[in-house]
Image (cartoon, rainbow, N blue to C red; front, side):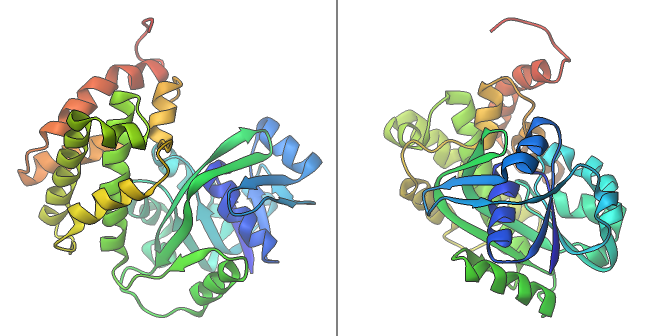
Length: 313
């Protein structure tokens, strides 16, 4: 399969690297020093599941230099999806499937608006990974899992082939019949964990250990669950308990990418995680006091990172 990875951060680097390791024809779309390092020394992945290097690696800055592919994995930040949708048009042919791996629940509709819903499947992943240096990805924890399927769950040999490629290199794949519900199950976790972590500066173990912070996390989880149900998503009855148990299962030093971005002064996915919950809560009449507090607390830092405010911290 010809596969393009658009967005070469921790997610795109790991899951794209695994496809190349499986022997697929993978094109990495990167830029700047990251692109130069991949071209020079290959893509290096340090992982708790085993290190590997893809060398030589097919790396380009311009999607037009690649042309239509079978699959595009979109792994940019949530706030970059609309721009990415326009940029990946040269990669999309008549039979191309585009799979978003962003946090949040708005990426697929945004891609479909530009590329056509016939090309866009549902998708997401679970992993804790980041760019350690140009051309180097570090997978720090959380069992890597990638999930994808068409919204109506219909069978597709192209998705079956993608699953088989991942399974050849030991990556767990899920193809949920209700990919929207599965996406929201992940969203309940990541939005709550990211928001509480960002506002408290605390990793998972500390969030759980401090009673007041643990309660904040529990309240945040409950709010997203209520918003999801109000949006018509078919969530499991015990989703709140399952989400808390999942947080308890991850390494105690784990942090979320949104949390790291905010604390390091970079633009983040605040609008597409916490902001989405607040907006959807207002739309459906669901109170979201915990997420509203988190959003209001973090918004000045977000606006500072985007050059809209100037103040010292």
